Image (cartoon, rainbow, N blue to C red; front, side, top):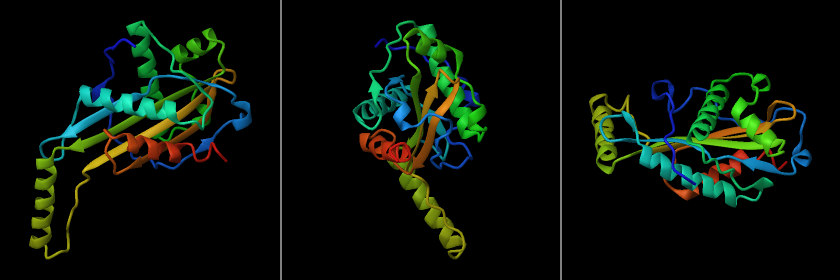
Length: 222
């Protein structure tokens, strides 16, 4: 697939929403038995690095690595009856799809009532053009720290603990990853299944996504 410039409003993008990360499972009438095949789309990835203090800086190279790792683990997972990810050659259309996934992420992580969220128009049109009812979109967010930054933040936490006689002590997250999985129903124009999860894990390791996919699909398998 060609590489595309993904245009997303970085000012509007928070690394982690304040919402809970509980798996919701099926949220509309279709069941696992109804979903015989799902059209897969490239995941949306937003990964940053902390080099100074606790400020996360978005990194497009790290995001590309995370997207590839997540995409591979998603393709390897046999729980869903997936079709290969749709190849979108047009960069404008690809960017619009990625932005629509971003919007879905904001709705889901923002605790918007899932049953009221319609399918985004571009994704819907692609599903209809391909004669597919169900579409699978996924996203992951995360950050990692440089070794020096993590060691420095740990040392700072120890110093604060000593100064406060142990009444206050902080241990920084070294890594954190949050993932979401959404199955869209173009026939009913709504979300059929949604799940989100997060953990203190490296967004640049395959096993992070392997482990999180088990949690994301736990209620689908029931």
